[in-house]
Image (tube, rainbow, N blue to C red; front, side, top):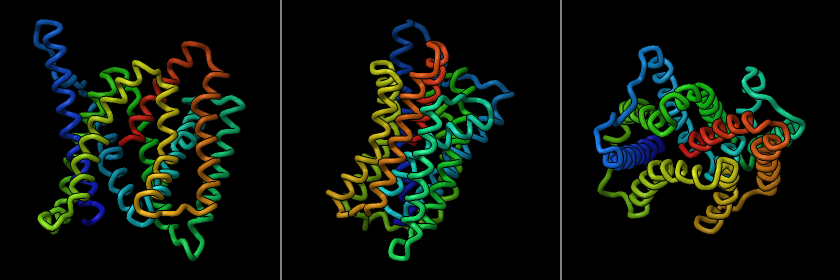
Length: 297
């Protein structure tokens, strides 16, 4: 399959699963209250432009560029670029004066920058040739971070899961339209069983049900622990790629991963605990939980 055909198929399965989970939650809530309630929130007119913008950024352009970038590199390497998200988000928030950093936060950003330079240098080597894929993935990451900062007010007002579902439906419909030529050209009957597993299970479970599980985990474990689990994604991707399809990470990729993941933990966990009051930490952890959802997408 072409990258965009695979991506939009998986994305569609995730959207269907996400709405199915939302509907089950809606029915359970109606039974609990013994009355009918609204399935999706009533979005105020003034919020629609922001919702449309984040839908295009987060559910159309970011996954499109992400899968095209993945097609030019490999999965474990792409996961390392995703792990750079907390540093990019914190740096942008600092520049926009929407977030504050302590000394551990500065140290985390420095580590992430060093890891980025190492990873970029590794991709520029002639025997690697990943520079174009790296560049496309960085653009996709920046779009995801911008969406994160734009979605915060809507998520706080209407709830994170309903807003994620709405933006997935809106942006996913546009993504489906863009990908329709590739979908028509795909020979669906010739696809192997592992491709169908990747589309159905990877989409429905990874994207759709995964969102619901994450929200449930936030209530049981707390945002900090969930964020820590999220930072294990690059390590798991490197290990699974090595065991399943024989992708051997280069020495520089391993070193850059240590720097980037270490920087993310300093920014997301240690700096948050060291430099915030209880209320400030609560707000920061709400933002981190939103970022975790964006990274899962």
